[in-house]
Image 1 (spheres, rainbow, N blue to C red):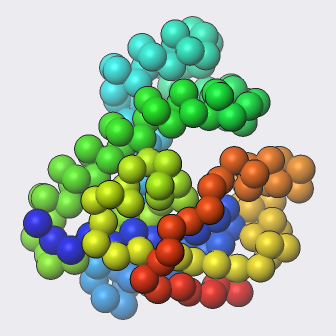
Image 2: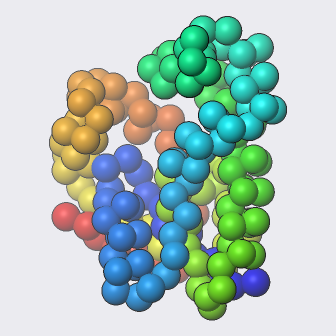
Length: 173
């Protein structure tokens, strides 16, 4: 089993940039928990069935694709909704990451994840890299990237917990 590094930080901190640099400069494969969670939301029957029961049948469109806006609306509506969704999706993503890590034929792998402790990933990684940036920079990046209002970004930030003490901090301004 390779050494596992978590790349974490708040929304707009620059986690993806650091992940790309780790791959480009060091050859470390990085598991993107967000994109893999989206893939699993489409592929996993367990996730599909439980999301329909929690959110409603219209959480998936007629073609069977997840309605991300509807899910986000439910998820960010209150902390209990976020807890339910996280309790469903995080263990499945964690298991997928561990299977992926085992298949890599390298000494070191990484996972990019905003929700390190909430996902349980902190229990299976060997090192933590936290990416930081000033709050206003993070807000501006997220607004531009996601096409959302400042209020929406602040709402999402309020749902993210503090991060465990990292082994390395990268200030990504």
